[in-house]
Amino acid sequence: FLNLLSHSHPLPLPPGPFNVPIITALVWLRKSFSELEPILRNLHAKHGPIFALRFRSHPRVFIADRNLAHHALIQNGAACSDRPKADATSKIFNRNQHNISSASYGPTWRLFRRNLTSEILHPSRVKSFSRARKWVLEILLRRLQSESVSGKSILVVDHFQYAMFCLLVLMCFGDKLDEKQIKEIEVAQRRILLNLDKFIILNFFPRIGKVLFRKRWNELFQMKREQEEVLVPLIRARKKANEERKLAQEGDEFVLSYVDTLLDLQLPEDKRKLDEGEMVSLCSEFLNAGTDTTSTALQWVMANLVKYPHVQERILEEIKGVMDNRDENEVKEEDLHKLQYLKAVILEGLRRHPPGHFVLPHAVTEDVVLNGYVVPKNGILNFMVAEMGWDPNVWEEPMAFKPERFLNENNSNGVGEVFDITGSREIKMMPFGAGRRMCPASGLALLHLEYFVANLVWKFEWKTKEGCDVDLSEQQVFTVVMKNPLEAHVSPRF
Ligand code: HEM
Image 1 (tube, rainbow, N blue to C red):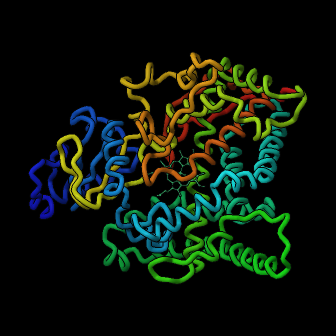
Image 2 (image 1 turned 180 degrees about the horizontal axis):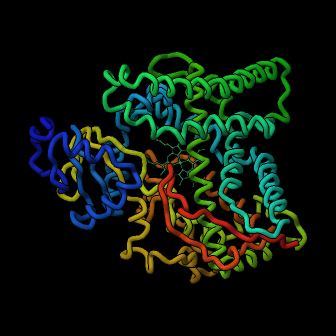
Image 3 (image 1 turned 90 degrees about the vertical axis):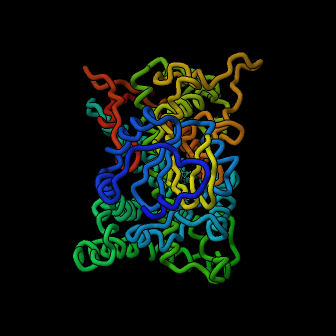
């Protein structure tokens, strides 16, 4: 409160609702994120494209306008790319902000992020995991095939989630793991994700809470221990295998995994290697960041293909055009670049149904002026991703599913110009964020989506459950998922 009273900048803070110290904080902090989104939408309608909530020492500023987002994230990128201080419960899982998404904007974050992008997400490295992708695709197709035999419709959400999780586990711990090991990791990771909400209360009174909520703190530590019991042996096994491989000097079959790249990293500030806890935090981030986001997007895209059979048909025709042989079993990764309509469908899915309606919170490291208002140093910024993708000033009929909008049919070869998903020149939508904290894995996520959608359409015809229409209502559960998960009739095409 005193911080806000001492506001000394000549420009005002962004407008926002009236604030009664402490009372407003208690009202806001008790709300879940899904309750907050409609309130934020109303505030956007009332106060305009930038508004602030002032219930804690530092204002929370929300931006709903794409040009202001560009101004903050690209033009003022250096000042708007920090993260807020982690609260007590998050620190246990991110090891005092020692992972990419929570690290402060500085040398440690740069080291972690550069390691991921150059060692794992570089196109040549991504290619080295193609065998893993093929294996996971086969598992998914087999599961769908066996359920389709009964003739009943299939609830696909768990199958999609498991497939995306498998992909990331194999990239993280090496492509030699079997399904039983993968399941064990999934159980430990899911338990944490699904229970985190229960522990939010521990952050409000961390000191007295240690005594008052002792049982709940113990539960939290127990979950952390169980995660380490599953992940640490995998890290150690990989370390041992690396040492043996170096001694034996063989390497032809070897595929570098994410955990291998962490073993030799040196922390720039502490001048030491990562401890096992920090490696667990980075691996866990890798698995979580890429599973629900991608499987949610996959489900939204498939739901639209079931709802709009003409879109599904056009993808199928496009695939037929690039297959040498109609009986070919698989749409190969090498052929994906020829499937421009498929790419447009994926982009339209991400525009219309971004898995996250906001980005992760950004902290501001110096006063930044946006639209005549000041966002003060240490203020927290967030961006209304869904609102930008649905802006009628940018997108015609924004709530309709029209992949053609991403194709520039007037081009001489009928192929659309590549849409710039990074928003570096201009932001039209930002499902992966934009600027220095933008998702480093947007390329990998698009590859996973294109490869799986192409093959799911090539192998099966997807139809609605008899007598039902596909319901596109939303619900926030970590990502923004389908309130009524997709249930579809899936019949093999050959
Ligand atoms: C459709 C899939 C995905 C979507 C929609 C998505 C979206 C996002 C968004 C919105 C952010 C926050 C940007 C910000 O704070 O400004 C983010 C950050 C991040 N994502 Fe993704 N993501 C996806 C897939 C992945 C995958 C597959 C991985 C890893 C293998 C990944 C790793 C990360 C990491 C490490 C960050 C933190 C970046 C930083 O703070 O520097 N994401 N993602």
